[in-house]
Image (cartoon, rainbow, N blue to C red; front, side, top):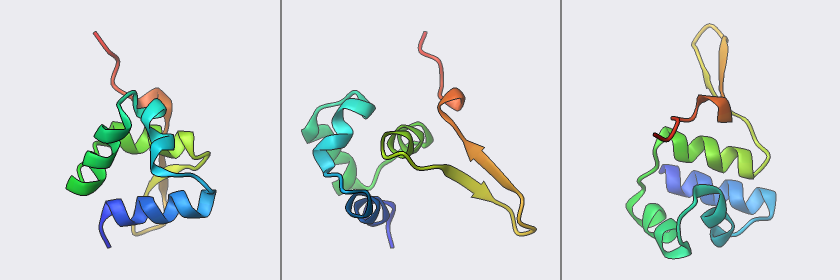
Length: 78
């Protein structure tokens, strides 16, 4: 399953729609649709989306250790 499909499922579970991601990503609704059609999401995008949907984004190692990716991890704008 693609990242876009997983994000669509997450939107459905949380009761959100694709346009709801425009503001958190600071892009237009059309640009959000383009990201979904191209399946092109950066780590920063995924952190912003998970935060907007009140979810946690994490990486889990084979031995069960979890590293959370948080808004504090976002690249700082110059």
